[in-house]
Length: 117
Image (tube, rainbow, N blue to C red):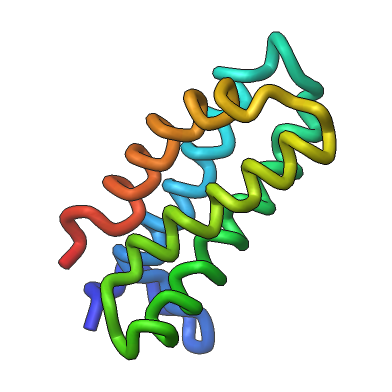
C-alpha cells in the first residue's frame, strides 16, 4: 500500500500517483523543450500522449506475453514502435526523436517509478 498524501473520500492521492503525475508533466515539458525549435509544439504534445499510451499498453502486452515478466521491456518497446510510426507518418527524423526521447524516458522512469518501492 502506498502512503496516502491526501484523502478526500472517493479521491485518494498517493505518493506513487503524485510521482506519476509529476513524471507526465516533466516528460512532456522535456520533450517539448528539446524539439520545439524543429517541430510544431502541438504535434510534440500529441506525440507525447501517444508515447505514454504506448508505454502503458506495451508494458501490459509484455507482461501478458511473458506471463509476468518485467514491464520495462514493453514500456520501452511500445514507444519505440510509436516513434518509428510517427517519424514515418509525419516525415520527421527518427534518430532526432530517439535522441530526444532517451533522456526524457530516463527522467520519467526515475520520477515515476524509481525509489517509490
